[in-house]
Image 1: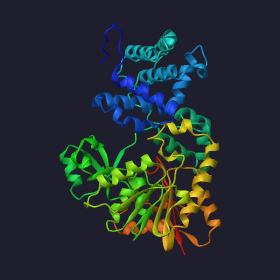
Image 2: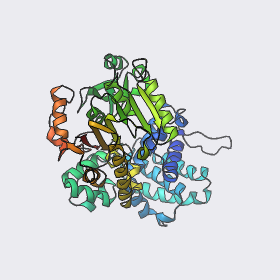
Image 3: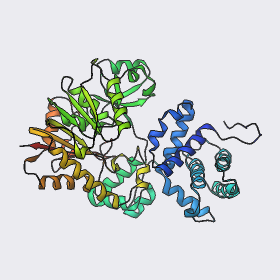
Image 4: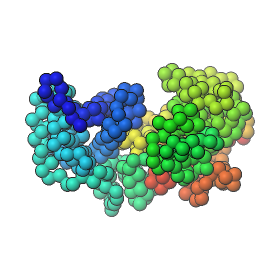
Length: 461
């Protein structure tokens, strides 16, 4: 509920103020909305306000191009000439007008006008008010959710209806076909399910006792999908008996398997490191990250979550291009920095930030990292290369480029490893062929109900 300040001026609700600030930071600082939403800055929000903030931020980012199209039709000025604060306030209001029927139009309009004033853009207040009232007069009734079905007969139609850049849609149609591209776009525009990994035999019973409704994992026996409840408020989560981790990410970590001496060379934020440690309780694990602050966070994570009372994980701040190790490792994970196009349901800002030329730059960096870490693999050892990208340049092309220059490593068929995991009861997904492509692991958003990941297994002969 909106209140008034001491000067009797309408105040902005905490949720809308937080959403506005986050959207501006995403725009100006290339921050990630999901990280900001879970930062300490917004701990003060009530659960209701935090939920609305999340709805507003993610809704605006997912549907930005569609919102901009509607704003453009009602605006007397080109959107390119509007200050970021004005555009953010307009997008927030239009998202509420179009999709959130439980919010009165007057509240959406008035508070966006106040947000503009709060941002010291008072001269634009009348413009924002006029644009929003014009749009409100023709607004369709809100449905409290984005359109449930996206259909299209062409790349242009799919890009427009699903609020994606057409260059990305063109690529996905070429790589996976129109129907799969539609499934990917639908998934990206939906709220992703919260998947967890159970780390303790009693974790599931504890969670259910705390009111969390769970469903079985789609891919893995150790995974659960949260149907209802806030997992982060539970004692089981706070004590480290379960962790939030997408099932495709869990699967990549599982492919590392068991080793006597393990290297995770691009380890932060640490979800895969922790999963590898849980599978290899008695093996030394070296986790490397380039950035000191990320390495510190990683160290705190693995030590806090250590279930055995001792941590076998050693965290090192180093560049994966110049690893400071003379010893080799029988298991190496290279989960390299990538475009993240397989995670757009969680990180929708990526699709507005990424440009085609970025893929070549990323590929060069990924290939350099892979070639560097290949030298750290012992005889008979394995290297797992992975990304959360859907793009060939970052996946197959990197592997092929690296193998072309090193005949001492060979590609291992991921399908064979998945079949072994299935026999062991670890993998519960039945259609292994849909998870593999030319010997590589490939999960597709909307097809496999998880993030999009790629993985390849290389073995030193």
